[in-house]
Length: 337
Image 1 (cartoon, helix red, strand yellow):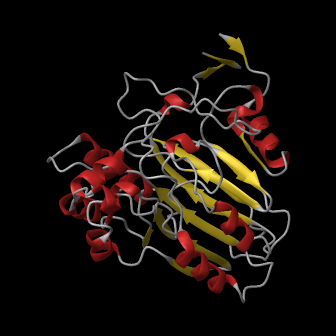
Image 2 (image 1 turned 90 degrees about the vertical axis):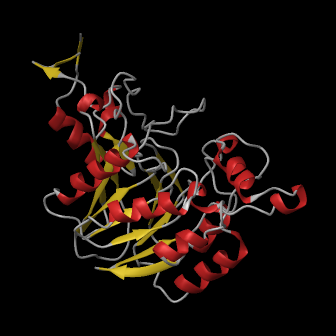
């Protein structure tokens, strides 16, 4: 056992004073795995509200696969939140192999949510039929809306140049290539020119003080390009949004807790409902928001959902809600074990 230097309350106080952001857990080198604060330096006023994020279900075609129940558990966890979120964002990868039956299964489970849902695709949803089934079930992959003073944007960040036609690949072979974490074949992902033009038009007439929240499947910064933990045209996205006082970016894909800030954009990652990825071998920016290594003996450790509470000053409190409490060290009499 090692002595903890600060109480949980002191951790929370520290997080509120740390400036741009901090994961409470990292303040003294342990991980409570629950809180991230993204503090806006300026920006428009909002009517306080909360929303939740579910991401990366990776459903298989077989009946009663364990990932089915884990997505059901995530839906139940969100439905039981108090107060209830105004809406839910799904961060991509409903399916594992992009088949229509996997996507239909995901839509059926997600339809049990008691609040509205917005969704963007992941690469596992897309490359079997180039998004045909996904669009038929979920609608447009590029969208925006306004909610209580905040402008929300969703983009499809997993687009790649056509590598399959010259190689004569079948749809299944194309999907197999895109399923690989470390495949060098497709090249870097991005949103590409059409969505960049759409985004520029979408935000053109918004005042710089407008609070912006943007959703993409992949990070809008170069976290670890070798695993496609990046978006190739993220610099162009950040440039389009540079006029705004503060931008919050939320993404899936990495299956872990993570924070980064570039300029006016704070980025926060979502845990998955399927499995946790290990952290790649790179140094993370302060405050090094690593969650504890998942316990391999607990099938759902390192997975869960997130809930974000936005304050009047566009200050975002991101609470990680893991399926298992092993992300939180056992505390007793000022000690952690």
